[in-house]
Length: 132
Length: 132
Image 1: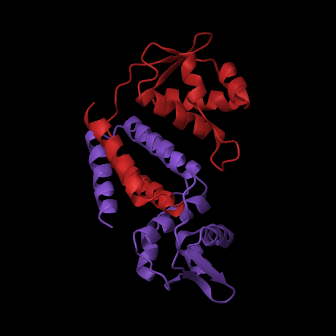
Image 2: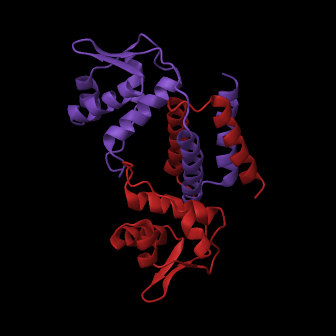
């Protein structure tokens, strides 16, 4: 469990809100299976200290993840990973993914990442998803 | 040219800053080749009116795109699309892309988009990139 925390990297210099970076980072760990149902996440205070951010920021991130059905938050019990039912995707969710994917690729090309590298990375992730 | 503008959709209810949504959207259009070197982008005022946002927000987005080497901004000449040299990618750019891709996939799964749909969409974009 604790080994999961150091993988969570946030960039305080980024224009992306910190709580959003924490949400995205933990979500990626949850989807990757680094945390499993029944696992206890580190406390808000612990994560706040590790990342050097205000504990309200971490609490807000945990609340978003709880609303998404990933976490069960109980007073005094900390945050427990839930065996999550995947919701029905809305059209917005599907279209949103397609749009964000295009934008992400455009940003990578802007940053000079070769198209072949981008294509290879996406194919790899796609293969991994296809095999689960 | 003008036909490119309506494709730019922004979500005023999103927590993502509007200027960032404009930057991402136009970048995707540029990478897709919807605007070509020498093309004139609509004026800041025009885009601001079309999207219903403050013109400073659009001006800021154009400045970011100019800094990235996509646009040439000249007083009284509007914004011209530049034949852009792709920069050498930094390690941060490559790692950043990989990280954001993982986070984007995790968000889509959270929103209930089936893994097969995500994989198929990524494979399609990868194939398109590979063929250019």
